[in-house]
Amino acid sequence: MSKGPGLFTDIGKKAKDLLTRDYNSDQKFSISTYSASGVALTSTALKKGGVHAADVATQYKYKNALFDVKIDTDSSVLTTVTFTEILPSTKAIASFKVPDYNSAKLEVQYFHDHATVTAAAALKQSPLIDITATLGSPVISFGAEAGYDTTSKTFTKYNAGISVTKPDACASIILGDKGDSIKASYLHHLDEFKRSAAVGEVYRKFSTNENTITVGGLYAIDHSTSVKAKLNNHGTLGALLQHEVVPKSLVTVSSEIDTKALDKHPRFGLSLALKP
Image 1 (cartoon, rainbow, N blue to C red):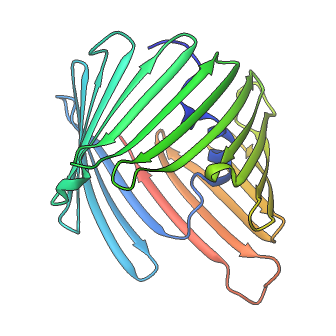
Image 2 (cartoon, one colour):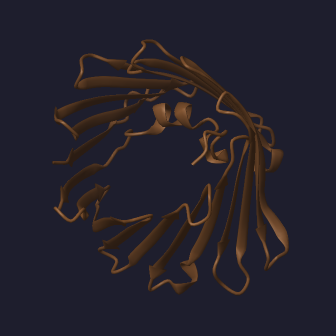
Image 3 (tube, one colour):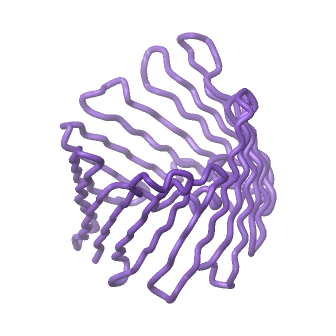
C-alpha cells in the first residue's frame, strides 16, 4: 500500500482513541490462542449491566486474503473476508451476517501517494452507498464522506475534515452531522517513545448550541503500566489504569464519575485480555 494521506476515518482518530479507547463500565474477559497453521482463536465473555454475552472469533490468513468469523450467543455468525492487492494499491472487504441476509456489504479501498478513495455498498436491491475521499500527504490531508440511500433518494450523511500530523503532534477539524456540528482536536506527545500524551477536544452542535470541551492525558508509569484520565466541562471525570501482566496480556481497570453529582455511584469497568 502507498504512504499517502490515509483514510477519512483516520482524521482525528488518534485524539479520539486517547479519549475513548479502553474506557468502559463493563466486565470483559478474553483469551486468544494461536495454532501452528496460523489460525487465531479468541473467546470473549462480557457482562454489560445485567446482561451476559459471549462470542468466539477465529482469524486465518492465506496469501493475500484474511478470513474473520465470529459466532455469538445470539446464534449469529459474522464473516468478514479482506483481500489485499487484488489490483495494485487496492483492498476489498466483504462481510455478511447469518441469519440477517440483508447485512451483506462490500467495500473497496484504493490507496495512492496523494489520495485515498473508498466506496462501500450494501448488497441488496436498494443499497445504502458510502463514499469517502482524502487528498494530501501523511503530513496534511483534506477529506470528505457522503452516504446515499437509494430507496429514499436522500443523503444520509455528508461530512468533511482536515488533519495536520507532525512527529510529536496532530490536529484535526471535522465538520459533521451534515454541517450541524464541528469538532476540533489536538494531541501532543510528551516523550520520544509516544507513551505519554496530552489531548484536547472541542465539540459544538449548532442546532442546540451545545458545547463540549474535553481534556485528557496518557502517562506511562513504567514499561508495563500506564494511566489515562479525561474531564469535560459537564463534570464527567474518567480514569483508567492499564497493566501488561505478561507481554501482550493486559488488565484494565477504569471508572467514571459525575463530579456535579457526587451522591451518585461511580461506574467501574474491568477488562482482562490474555494472549500467548
